[in-house]
Length: 410
Image 1: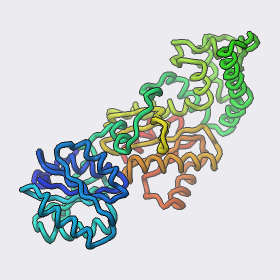
Image 2 (image 1 turned 135 degrees about the horizontal axis):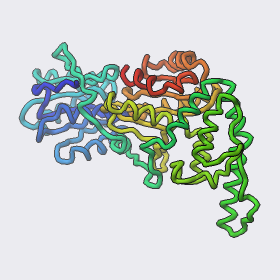
Image 3 (image 1 turned 90 degrees about the vertical axis):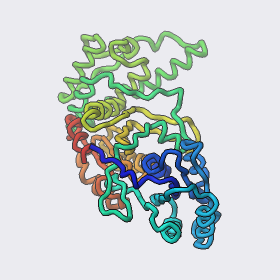
Image 4 (image 1 turned 60 degrees about the vertical axis):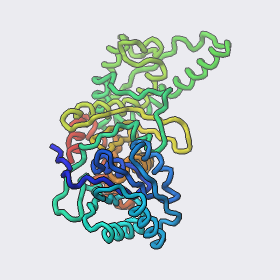
């Protein structure tokens, strides 16, 4: 169970140092600002836009203090002295110094201690998701005391979900997901499936796209209609192939994707079916693993295929979940290739850290045969704190829900 914040930690004037990630300040303000208290946003020119966005969550309770040079001790002291004289609300004073530059943290901390000897000085520990107070030994677990959703997290970074693309919240082919996962635990079966996609699914997808364009232009012929794809033939994929036959209501060895896309299957178009076969089944498998652990591990939001509105800071996540204020992001691929898997892991690591800060946890779900080796390699070369990155490989796929239970509880 989460702890509660001691009432004497909450103050009438809460100074927060605004850094590159607004999440710690958002959490601190919700936890430490008294009702009708004043939130003092201490920012630099570089972080002023972030401060402005934070202010929108506390529209009637904030004052902004902008530093022209966030490393200038004299300016920091002057701005803070003015704030404590002119903009000071009668009552108690607190400083939350998780964000900002080191110079800001040192000098603001120092002057507040000089001017307000009884000030409450706090920071968030990203390793333990606890709130620490300088004057008290015991820290407070706060992970579940603030629960922003993904839209709020994006909004803090002036991003929004792409309204033309609705994230998935439910898996559709649970049994087929599991059977494909079981088959891909074998390297030879995974390679056979990859070859099957290359020989049949990708060519069909390309032809189908051309056919759709021709239909729109009025130049389509019936030559494409009735084209079929054989079922996967590797012995370890036969259970998956049999499940496809049942879903597509086919008794032979081939299926027509246009006829297979029915409401019973749960995919809305030929394009969705093809994307599923080409690799989206891994995303659905991950979605299923999160949802099976949702209640036990207190996940208040799980979304698959998250895309933001196009802009220079465009984000796209395969699967994301929120556990308290901690963001979990998973990149998914059926690839067995080390370099590709490493590249996908690096991309999601950068994006998740930008959005969820040091608290974010990142995983890659793939068909890597030695996931521990890849995990150790990236942690060492990227100097990532132990536990922030996890790689789930081929042997994990059939048991992914159980593996996620351990990960979410760690």
